[in-house]
Image (cartoon, rainbow, N blue to C red; front, side, top):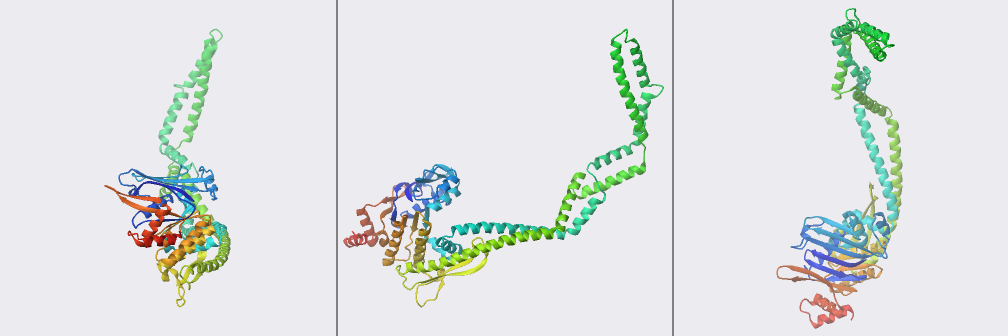
Length: 552
C-alpha cells in the first residue's frame, strides 16, 4: 500500500512530503484547490504521458516519488524477472520530467522503461475517476469484471496461449492459400519460363568459355600468324634458337672437367633448352589447332546471343544467376504440384488449434455464466442499502466470433424501479446510480484481486445524504479488509467516515499560486466537515452536526 508521497515542482505544488496510512482515508478541499493535481502526479507514476507544462512555472524539473509497502504483496517474481533490487519490504517508484521534455522512470533507484513502471504501478494502485463510469459501456470491461469474480486468470492464460496458436496457424494458412493462388494464376507463365531456361541447358562457367572461344575464332588468322613466327624463331634452320642452345650446352659440357664453372652453366642452359623445346612443341600444336572456321564462330556467337538475351530478359549478368532463377521457379512448380498435400496439412493444423481454442473458450463461457449469476446476486444485494431498493440487475451473454477474449459478448442490464423494464445500464441509469454500481463492482473486484491501494475520485457524484453515508461505509469496509482506500470527496457524510482525513488548499502569493495538502488533526477535522456542511460561515450548529457525523 501507499506509505509516502513526495512531489516537487509539479504544476501548483512547490513541495509536498506526506505520509499515508492503512484503512479508509479521505481527501477534501474546495473546488480548484488542487485535488486533481495529486491524482495527476500519481498518474505519472502509473505511466501516464508526461508534459513539460506539468513542471511548475520557472522550474527545470519536477519529481514525483512514492513509497509502497509490499509486505503483503506477491510481486517478488516481477523484481527477479526484471533484475531490480527488492528487499521484500518496500518499493519506491519515481518519475522525473525535465523542461526539455525528457522523462525518466525509476523503480528502487533502478532506471526502467516507462512500460515497466506502468506494469508495476497497475499492481499497486487502482485510480477510479469519473470517466471510468463509461467503462460500463465496454464489452472488455464487463468481461474483465466477470473473469475476476470467477478467478479465471489461469483459464484465461491457457486460452490466451491457445488463441495465439490458432491465430498463428490461421496466418500460415492464409499465407499458404495466397501463395498457392498467386502461383496458380502464374502457373502457365512459370512453366513457360522454366522451359525457356531449361531449353539450352546452359552450365555454370559456360559463358566465360564461349566468350573465350569467340575471341579466339574472331582473331584466328592473327593468332596463327603469330604462332608460326614464334615457331620459326625457335626451330627454323635459319635461327634455330633451340639447336644453338643444344650446341652451346654441349660445348660447356666438354670443358667442365677442366673448368668447373662450365658444368653449372651447362646445366642451366640444359634447363632453358628443355623449357624452350616444350614451348616450341606447344606453339606447334596450337598453330595446328587454331583454324578460322566461320561456321564454328557463328555457332558460338549464336549460343552467346541466346545466353545474353536470357540474361537481359531476367535482368541478371551470369549463368549462375539464371540457374538460381530456374531453381526458384522449379521450387514454385514443385510446391504447386504438392500444394494439395501441403494445404491439407496446414488446414489440419489450423483446425486442431482452432478446436482446442474453442474448447477452452467454452470452458471460459461456463465459468463466466456461473460468475455472472454471482455478480447479479451480490450486486443487487449491495445496491439495496445504497438507495435502490427495487433494483434488478442482469448480465446477458451472447455469442460472438472467436476473439482474443473468447466467444462471449456481455451486456449489463439494469432497472431501478418496479415498473421499468430491464435495459442496458448505460442507457437507463442516472449518474448517481452508475456511481453506486461502479463502487459496488470495485468492492467486489478488490476482494477478488486484493489490490493494495484503491483511490476513488469523487465516486459520490450524484448522491447525497444517507446513500452517501452507505457508500462511505462500503469504502471503509474495503479499507478495513487489509487494503488501503482513499476517497476524494465533496460530501461531509463520506469525509466523516474516513479513518484519516487530508485537506488540499490553495494559497495565493505575490506572483504565484501554490497548492498544499496536509493531514488534519481531530479538531481541524471537525472544522473542515463543519465548513463542508455550512460553507465559510461555520456556525455552532454546523460544529455540532460535524461532531455528530464524526460520532464524537
